[in-house]
Image (tube, rainbow, N blue to C red; front, side, top):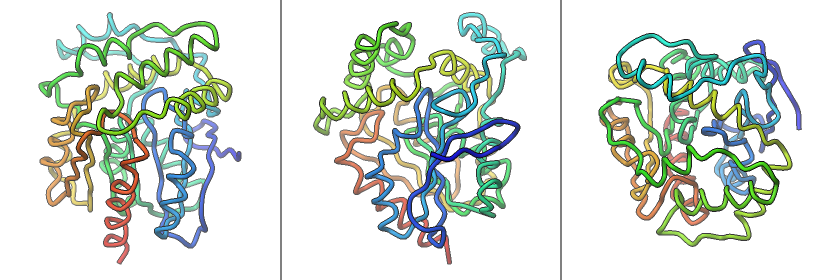
Length: 295
């Protein structure tokens, strides 16, 4: 796959469809590589007229790793953040948004439709706030405004996220599968063979837990976006799973309520993942938004 330069770093990316299609940038979530945007999902978006670009965020996959930066301790960060104190972290969500804008620069795309999942939803919100002229429409999936008083993750989901990683390949893959079972979609079938294949492919492509810790620090140290989003005038779709245990549905509702005239799509039985059974609803929602926003 090709690489490009953005914001002083190197990013792995690939694309689907023809550049003449509606440009659609996909931004993935915490510790998750771009291949989590399944190729079949991307092709379904191409079939609806898009030129789809996906990329690895900094500190994950085959993009630049910030090995020279410290790995922050959340135990030390959280009390300071909750007390309103400033904290030092290697980067914040705003920097990751600049990365994504730089991806558009490198590909010579003046403005794109942007879609983000989980932390990726936070990143695309920052993109829209930092560079409104570069964004045609925004879809925020299973994400949140970051408002501090929103309901937290369910304890069992947060516990999975905070588990120290295993050290052997087979154990790491099993740990990934168990996490998917806990945070995934109870209303859709769990395809263990497919999940195992994806976990294996992801591990063999890149396994870099230090990057995930720095990304968690970026989320934690970034300011809430709720007030800023109230002034955003942008065609927006907010998608959330009704059964999301990691980012509760209140986070999606808050995003929808903050952005005037945004659309809301609640998917019954969907947790904190992108189950194949929900793809038709998600692809249709994104496509109808981008069609309306391209005229």
